Length: 109
Image: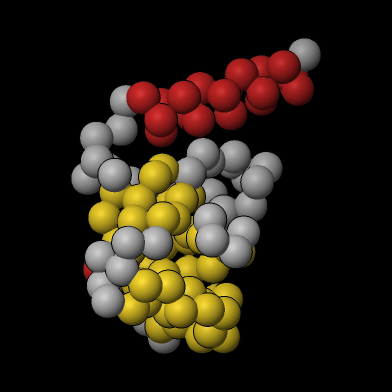
Protein backbone atom coordinates (compact mmCIF):
# COMPACT_ATOMS: atom_id res chain seq x y z
CA UNK A 1 0.00 0.00 0.00
CA UNK A 2 2.84 2.40 0.85
CA UNK A 3 4.38 1.78 -2.58
CA UNK A 4 1.09 2.70 -4.27
CA UNK A 5 0.89 5.93 -2.29
CA UNK A 6 4.50 6.74 -3.10
CA UNK A 7 3.98 5.97 -6.81
CA UNK A 8 0.86 8.17 -6.90
CA UNK A 9 2.76 11.03 -5.25
CA UNK A 10 5.62 10.76 -7.76
CA UNK A 11 3.17 10.74 -10.67
CA UNK A 12 1.39 13.78 -9.24
CA UNK A 13 4.68 15.68 -8.97
CA UNK A 14 5.64 14.74 -12.53
CA UNK A 15 2.23 15.72 -13.89
CA UNK A 16 2.33 19.06 -12.08
CA UNK A 17 5.78 19.81 -13.46
CA UNK A 18 4.61 19.19 -17.01
CA UNK A 19 1.14 20.70 -17.01
CA UNK A 20 0.90 23.33 -14.29
CA UNK A 21 4.34 24.90 -13.96
CA UNK A 22 4.71 28.25 -15.73
CA UNK A 23 7.86 28.73 -17.84
CA UNK A 24 9.61 30.77 -15.14
CA UNK A 25 8.96 28.16 -12.39
CA UNK A 26 11.48 25.52 -13.38
CA UNK A 27 13.35 24.79 -10.14
CA UNK A 28 12.78 21.17 -9.13
CA UNK A 29 13.66 19.50 -5.86
CA UNK A 30 15.34 16.14 -5.52
CA UNK A 31 18.72 14.73 -6.34
CA UNK A 32 18.13 14.69 -10.10
CA UNK A 33 18.32 10.92 -10.25
CA UNK A 34 15.60 9.12 -12.17
CA UNK A 35 13.89 7.84 -9.01
CA UNK A 36 14.31 10.79 -6.60
CA UNK A 37 11.96 12.13 -7.88
CA UNK A 38 11.46 11.32 -11.53
CA UNK A 39 11.28 14.68 -13.28
CA UNK A 40 10.43 14.83 -16.99
CA UNK A 41 12.57 17.02 -19.22
CA UNK A 42 11.29 20.25 -20.75
CA UNK A 43 12.17 21.08 -24.36
CA UNK A 44 14.76 23.85 -24.83
CA UNK A 45 17.42 25.04 -27.27
CA UNK A 46 20.88 26.61 -26.98
CA UNK A 47 20.90 30.41 -27.35
CA UNK A 48 24.63 31.15 -26.89
CA UNK A 49 26.98 30.79 -29.88
CA UNK A 50 28.64 27.94 -27.99
CA UNK A 51 27.89 26.37 -24.61
CA UNK A 52 29.89 23.74 -22.75
CA UNK A 53 28.14 20.68 -21.34
CA UNK A 54 29.82 19.77 -18.03
CA UNK A 55 29.89 16.58 -16.01
CA UNK A 56 29.56 18.32 -12.65
CA UNK A 57 28.26 21.48 -11.03
CA UNK A 58 28.89 22.60 -7.46
CA UNK A 59 26.98 25.68 -6.20
CA UNK A 60 29.38 28.45 -5.29
CA UNK A 61 32.27 26.75 -7.13
CA UNK A 62 30.93 26.39 -10.67
CA UNK A 63 31.12 23.82 -13.44
CA UNK A 64 33.82 21.19 -13.92
CA UNK A 65 34.64 18.20 -16.13
CA UNK A 66 33.70 19.42 -19.65
CA UNK A 67 31.92 16.81 -21.78
CA UNK A 68 31.08 18.54 -25.08
CA UNK A 69 30.51 21.88 -26.77
CA UNK A 70 26.99 22.64 -27.99
CA UNK A 71 26.22 25.32 -30.56
CA UNK A 72 23.39 27.78 -30.96
CA UNK A 73 20.20 26.00 -31.97
CA UNK A 74 21.07 22.56 -30.53
CA UNK A 75 18.03 21.00 -28.87
CA UNK A 76 18.22 19.87 -25.26
CA UNK A 77 15.89 18.57 -22.58
CA UNK A 78 16.02 20.37 -19.23
CA UNK A 79 15.42 18.15 -16.19
CA UNK A 80 15.89 20.83 -13.55
CA UNK A 81 17.47 24.20 -12.90
CA UNK A 82 19.67 24.39 -9.83
CA UNK A 83 18.37 26.25 -6.77
CA UNK A 84 20.89 29.07 -7.36
CA UNK A 85 19.56 29.45 -10.96
CA UNK A 86 23.12 29.34 -12.34
CA UNK A 87 23.09 25.90 -13.95
CA UNK A 88 20.73 23.22 -15.24
CA UNK A 89 20.78 19.45 -15.54
CA UNK A 90 20.16 18.81 -19.24
CA UNK A 91 20.04 16.04 -21.84
CA UNK A 92 21.69 16.79 -25.18
CA UNK A 93 19.70 15.03 -27.89
CA UNK A 94 22.57 15.15 -30.41
CA UNK A 95 24.73 12.71 -28.47
CA UNK A 96 22.39 11.27 -25.81
CA UNK A 97 24.54 12.76 -23.03
CA UNK A 98 23.47 14.20 -19.67
CA UNK A 99 25.32 17.09 -18.07
CA UNK A 100 25.17 20.57 -16.60
CA UNK A 101 24.86 23.73 -18.66
CA UNK A 102 25.07 27.42 -17.83
CA UNK A 103 21.48 28.64 -17.33
CA UNK A 104 22.00 31.79 -19.40
CA UNK A 105 22.77 29.74 -22.54
CA UNK A 106 19.39 28.17 -23.26
CA UNK A 107 15.72 29.06 -23.60
CA UNK A 108 12.76 26.81 -22.93
CA UNK A 109 10.65 26.13 -26.03
